[in-house]
Image (tube, rainbow, N blue to C red; front, side, top):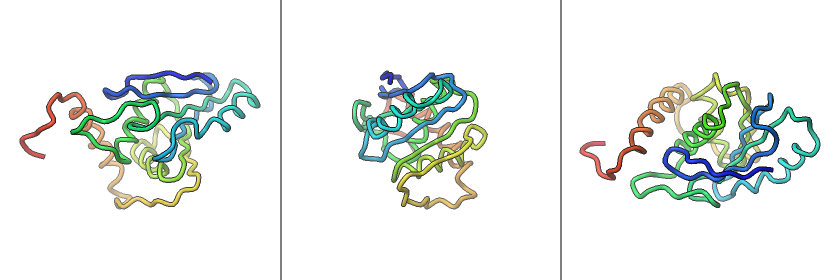
Length: 166
């Protein structure tokens, strides 16, 4: 496996990768809220040792977990932010073709959020031990994700932690 740190949306995000980044089958694995990238070590090693060069598995330490940086005081930890970070990782990896999202436990909500907000980028989701459901009505999710993502990019580049209106 290969470990690296990428600057993603103003944060250092620790990433672990098995296989070649440009493989035709790409999987983004999102660990549970209290886990880190090591959650997928066994699977990653199996993929790397038992498959052709045609599979790439990438996982990461979520913001505030493991070796990734923490959010600033005016930022937050939630499903939306995890989705934004995950998509920014995929963009940094230059994954332009659709990929599979795999998530464990509560991060399954992040996988579902990504798939609903970016259906043209995703070719499937796998939710392992998922129990959390989304509280947003299904028809609202795609537009909420898109506009929140655009809004969040502005907040991340802002040096202020106070705003005139919300």
